[in-house]
View 1: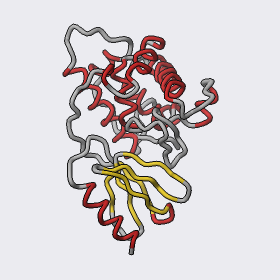
View 2: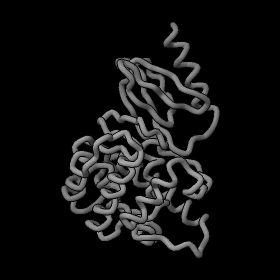
View 3: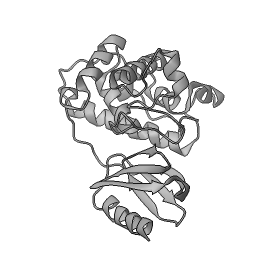
View 4: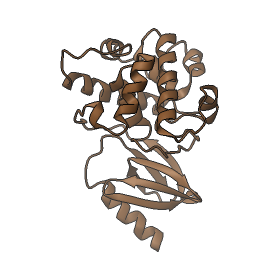
Length: 237
């Protein structure tokens, strides 16, 4: 009864206001909870929701699905956002637009440095442990190391796909091998398609609301000018 009460309360909170980045937690009871972030703590999912948090036993969660409805996100300068200094430093070091890094972090972890996905991707930029190790990360939950490695990886992907933002984001989400498997196109996975659309929408909103005089490093032009690719989605498989 306590779990049911918590779930119903959480459901009410979840739909109390529109979300800019969300996913559905599907429970065995059939209820779908809208969350802005989640992580596994022991034998429970710690769910972040509009208005608070709720813990749900892992065995009560049957699926986690992307929500394909997004509301505009007000532009905030990187310097005023969480981890702004770290994002700017990584942007300069790897010549990747800071707004793109911020957009990826917003979609990946909603700025939660302790976030862990159901596929074990971790930290602000949701790195898989194997990827983090390859990039020299010692503490995957350390914001500086995670942002540095995630930006390094983004830079590598932008170079690999010649600044094609859709393919870069698809590869970041699903892996370069899946982009290659589907003929250098966005893989036809609902989650990856939603992810690419969400990050591009956030990024383009940030660029359109920023000063026209602002110059951006590699990755910015591609993000604005590249048309949406064919269905492409992927997660950390």
